[in-house]
Image 1: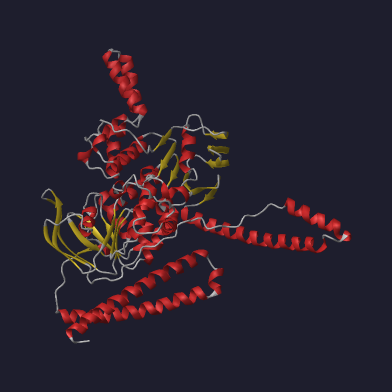
Image 2: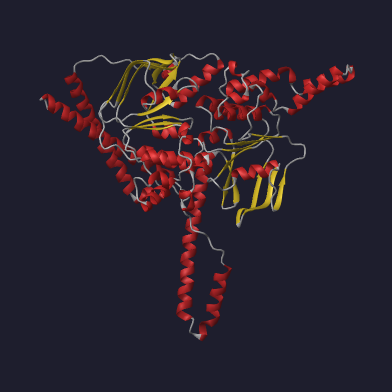
Amino acid sequence: MLQLNRVILKRGDRALFDELDVTVHPGHKAGVVGRNGVGKSTMFDLIRGRLLPEEGDVLFPRGWRVAWLEQAAAPSPRTALDYVLDGDRVLRKAEKAIATAAEQDDHDAIAHAWSDYGDAGGHDAEARAGKILHGLGFASGDFGRRHEEFSGGWRIRLQLARALMTPSDLLLLDEPTNHLDLEATLWLEAWLRRYQGTLLTIAHDREFLDRTVSEIVHIDAGKAATYVGNYASFERQRAEALARQQALHERQQQEIERIHRFVRRFRAKESKARQVQSRLKALDRMDQVAAVHAESGYRFSFTSPRKTSYPTISLDNVALGYDDVPVLEDVTLRVSPDDRIGVLGENGAGKTTLLRCLAREMTPMDGTVTRGRHDSVAYFAQHQLESLDLAKSPLDHLLETMSQQAARDYLGGWGFAGDDVARPARTFSGGEKARLVLALIARTEPAVLVLDEPTNHLDLDMRQALAVALQEYAGALLLVSHDRHMLRQCVDQFWLVRDGRVTRFGDDLAAYEALSQRKRAGNGDENAGKGEQRALKGRPQRGHLKSLERRERQLSGEIERATRQLAEVERKLADPATYRRDPSLIEELARERGRTRRSLERAEESWLAVQEELEATGTA
């Protein structure tokens, strides 16, 4: 088994690990979680032997083979296929032995080398490597491209493929889904479920953890606690443990106050001196139960638009592409103020191309893009992390429009505290850069938020805070994300980008996952089941006036329903009995209140806009 026994490790004067104890049994799969900076990656470095503890031991069987996902690797001239095969060092050693024996014309050595090659699975090694590459989104034509030709995100995928190709008894994966799309994430989950060795994975994707691990190692305040079950089970168990801790703390504080009252009352009485000393000694012996403090330090929101237009953006028969080569054709879409759209599709299908058009970062090759009067777009994409002015600090980015104290308060809500607000962006991690870009666009009062994989590098607390902020945001949202929990919390409809077209996907994520898996298996039918796609063609016009009247009736119904729903949620939240139930119920009710309030506000604004237009026609 893998054991970390009473490990102590310091960073300067601060103890990163204070008698850290972790045990993972052979064949078990564990997710390692905790806030950024608690030492998750450092624990992996200890296991790999890259760091040595100041005290304590890191132990696992001597014969265990260890494989890991390397987060950074120098560009290599090796082809993608060879780079992945290089992960199997036993295989490469056997190949080298075959070549050496052949050069020396040593028939016995040749026979032994070929035997070792067969034992290493050499006869089907390229097929296995190709299967891994395909699963992670590489096309067959990519296999012969050099490693150094790929972008940073695709190099991380190659490093992941190499780790999976490496024969191992212990596999260490640090944020393996960061640069994957949804399809590749689904494939990786299936691969890890079949993996026979011991797995430790650091991940901030709760659905990935739910589907791949059976225990959670939670690191906090220099110590670790292990919970049996997946991440959802861990959340329930930890919530219960924290509730018990808080109750014990409150009871203990009451007992401490009772003892203090007794001491204050009888300290001056000689007849009570023994009892007073006895109670003071009891206080000294008492193990203090700490109060529970909320872990998340994130407090932010996206500023909603003051005015909106209906529709906000219209695309009619649009073709999009690069260098006169179309990627998407015949795109006819409408983005309305109350839309919450998740954009699905395999990597390379054209999702980012579509978002770039909506965000004004590219012009169509053909067709028409019509924008409403209030159509401002805030766009988040990974390339913007590197387009930050790296010499500037977060404060520098905001001081042109805010006072220093206001800027500090605002940045504190995004997790930038103390000296961090004055550090140049070049010193930031990927997660810190992502938070800074999100903080900058959140203040722009956009009518449309366009987010392309915003959760990469973000920890679980930040992802949850982001989801809550997006629920409260009152503009239109278009979201590309491989984080299914984020999609389920924030969107209510899906567009599917596939085969050069954009269609409406009329079902949920589970149906899309099934569709994707059928396609990978080679027996999928894109028109099967409830997930049948409908092309977003322009709807027949029945006259502008009738359209407005129909829209007015629809919005009136939405306002009535949302008002009833909001009143019911408010009633439940005001009921003391609600707070004695499952803590997750309170969180869900709070999210529902935010969603309902946002829907009501959007419906009322849209209804007023329709009324104004009807008045202009003289019919209202």
